[in-house]
Length: 235
Ligand SMILES: NC(=O)c1ccc[n+]([C@@H]2O[C@H](COP(=O)([O-])OP(=O)(O)OC[C@H]3O[C@@H](n4cnc5c(N)ncnc54)[C@H](OP(=O)(O)O)[C@@H]3O)[C@@H](O)[C@H]2O)c1
Image (cartoon, rainbow, N blue to C red):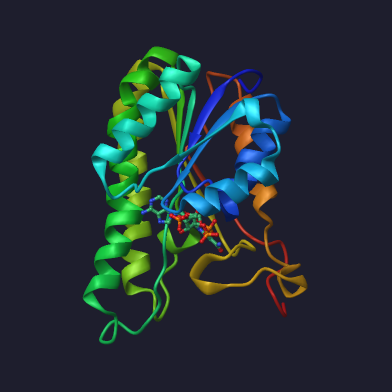
């Protein structure tokens, strides 16, 4: 399914979203990337170095109107959308009694409501293309941990949301999957990627996984994919 296909990736200016965008472009796809920060999007465009095949869009997934406009921009430019990756996410980690209300709200809005808004904005286009909707959840959507109450809540929710959406949308021949990564070397939660991250999954590895999903026979759907570093740090 990958050649000449058109994708929209939320949070495509950095980290996993940018890694997925790169792999998609290398496989011959056209890719729209979004994020809140215009400067980060400009830097991502430079890194991707394929002006004709990249569209960057300032859009905040917590704002449903932004997402509707973003999808319209992609369709106005390229005519259709085949793949939507709901990837944008944020993480704040603190004991539940110290977790701030605004951090809770930001995680909920970005990690859970955002993928719903992105799907709502794109679902009619996906029906037309018999496309693919993928969420980037996390192993935090199946393994709970101390300091993770807010983040765990959003990612458990996202896994449930995605699985139920899969059941609703398969009658339209829309595929729906959730990818649940362990540690990936990105700027997530203030991390600075460096050699110390060599043991982690790299963003392009998630890109390869997405391309594998797109290549899968239409009759077969890996709907929930856990992916982890082969050897976690110090193990
Ligand atoms: N890194 C990991 O170890 C890991 C593991 C499992 C799952 N994940 C998940 O993977 C996804 C991507 O994270 P990452 O590691 O690539 O993090 P990252 O390097 O911090 O990138 C996050 C991206 O999301 C965008 N973003 C954040 N809030 C947004 C909003 N409200 N609207 C639109 N875009 C927004 C950011 O751009 P702006 O700031 O400019 O908006 C950026 O492009 C997240 O859902 C995260 O939970 C990460």
